[in-house]
Amino acid sequence: MKKALSIFAMALLLVGCTHKKEVKLIPAENFNKEVEGKQVSLYTLHNGFLTMQVTNYGGRVVALWMPDQRNSFEDVVLGYDHIDKYLNNEGERYLGAVVGRCANRISNATFTIDSVEYQLPKNDGENTLHGGLIGADKRVWDVTSVNDSVITMHTIFADGEDGFPGNLDVTMSYTLTHDNQFQIRYAATTDKPTLCNFSHHSFFNLKGEGNGTILDHELQINSRYMTTIDNQLLTDGNFSGVKNTPFDFREKHRIGDNINADDEQLKNAKGYDHNWIIDKNDPKAYKWDATLTDPASGREMQVWSDQVGLQFYSGNFFNGKTKGKSGKPLNYREGLALEPQFFPNAINHETLAPVPVLRPGTEYHQLCIYKFAVLPKEKKK
Image 1 (cartoon, rainbow, N blue to C red):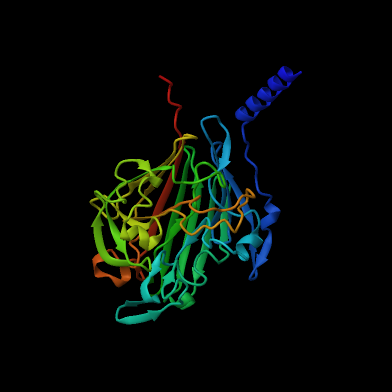
Image 2 (cartoon, helix red, strand yellow):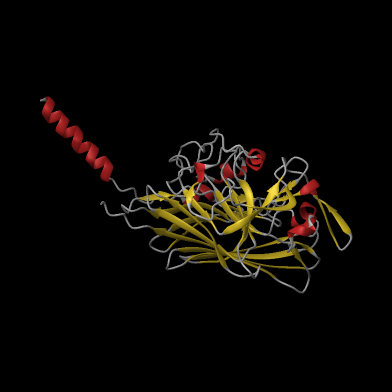
């Protein structure tokens, strides 16, 4: 009898080990709500390999499913399963959102264009972060078109909103391509000189949301230099070489290898929350920025963009007090962001050119691409 039970237990174990997880969509009705007089909805895009759910509240990527080497699917971005959890958020504000009209931090919540000083709301100590109190992430974008693989959204930031000058007219599209790219395109115009610097703020975990640390993910960044920060996480206008520092990701290695090193820059941010300068001769060139790999599942994500900098944030402020759509806590360093953008606080440092100033008669364009793949299994020797 004991032998029979042992065989049965072993069979259950084998079944559990070979179980393939399928895509589980969030019900669209969970996001069907009117917010400030505008309709919020949830949209599903797919290309046969990737399945992505997007809401027009903050242009948020709510879910992104992809397979692993066993063709088992996981949702590789952090998020919530209901619009109310975003509206009454007690945790990380920027989950999956577009951030702007000026991504990252602006020191002392002030900047000057053409000798005119502008005062912004302070939402990060004495500074402004990701566009201020409303920003791009707390507004309902108008969906101008949508099909199985592309969604296009539009909004106008009013002159004076969050303290920024100019009516900024922005169109943004998300596309899943046949070769497994998630493409983000931005286009904007203004009627007054203003700041314009958008970025995407999905938190990725290639193991799947709630499935453990990102410290054993491997990362490679196409960069020899970074912008240094002070103890308020503000760029101080200086550059530093990454060679022989914990910030050297020129060769792929584990994120956790050096994250706890005795380094002032790491201590300032309690981990990685810095901007790397992408290696390229032309600042407007479209280049490879970084590659993120989860060796256990074989999932891989490349980041490509036409931006000069890449912000890498290692999820240092997640505390496990809120739960994601998987029902599991969003724990410390269980999600990371890779955000192409201008250099942070460039408007307040002449050394951080180019500055993200958009003027009437010119257009802002940005292309950011996340390329997904599953690496082949290594043959056992």
